[in-house]
Structures are given as C-alpha cells and as structure tokens.
Image (tube, rainbow, N blue to C red; front, side, top):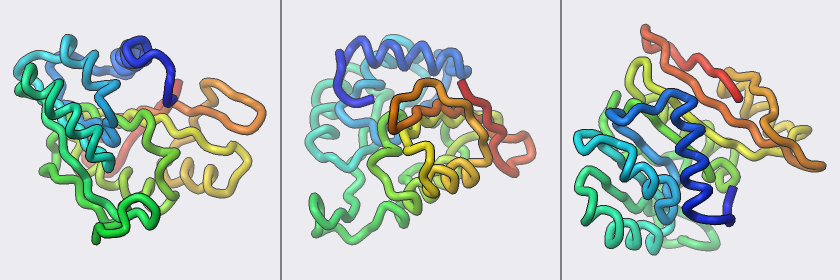
Length: 196
C-alpha cells in the first residue's frame, strides 16, 4: 500500500478503520507509522482526549511527524524504534523479534499495521502480533494489512499464527492482500478475527 496519493490513501484507510470499529474516543497505536499517512487523517477524527502513538524504524519519518504533526496535536506521539537491520541499521542492538513496544499492557483500543507486514520476517511479525495483543485492551481491535504470497509456506504459517482464515480483499497474479481485524476476547485469551 505504499505510494499513491498521501492524503487520499490515508482517508481511504480511515474509512476502513471506521468499518472495523474505530471511534473518535479511541486510543490508537500505529505500528510502522512512517511519515504519518494514517496519523494525519486521524488528527481531525480522534477526540482531543484520545491518544495516538506511532512508532517506526525510519528516524527521518519520525522526525518529520514530531516536527509537523505533534506540535499541532499534543495527544499525538511518535517514537523511533532503533532496531537492528544488517543493511540499514547495523549499529543497533535490538532485533525486531525482541522489540518490546514502549507502551504499558492494555493501553490501546485500536492497534493498526497498514504497511508493516511486508517489511518484517515471519518471526518478527509473529512477535509484533504478540506485542499488539499485549498492548490492546480487552474488546479492542487489531487491524493488519499483510501482503503475502498466497501460495507460500510463510503465508500459511502467518495466517495460522494469527488464528484467522481471512478472505482475499484483492488479488493479483502473484500476491493477495488480506485485511484482518480482530477484537480481543473478554477473558483476554486471544483475538477473535474477522476479515474484509
């Protein structure tokens, strides 16, 4: 879902989030927030009492959001995740599969990952899903947009790990795009997923 018209894509996602249950009073975590494509439309949707937190591994993206979004919206925070990558960040010590999100348990009503899954290895994505489950409140929603090769073993493992059997929302010759959203079970034992 990279590229495209920044504003139009953000607004389109906001509609999807509303369909998945996002309300103006929600506290939101944006995993892999980038340059604020989702944050910008949320600034006019979320209540001032709501909290938005986004994190990303790209320091320039976080700096841009911190300079251009946060000053106008003090309930919006942006965090740089200084994670190891052999090519892009070999100096960092923490791997994505070891990263503990810098938020307390049960902090958010809506956790989203729109353009993150294609940037993570399966072991990293599995860990991120576990962290998302940790920080989402009971009855909260996890919204993820994985783009995966539909015939790959990693795709099957990912879907099984997520305990979901989503239907393709769109398909091309080599990839299927799945939109998954799930609400935490009242007893805290896991996520009930639905797809669109």
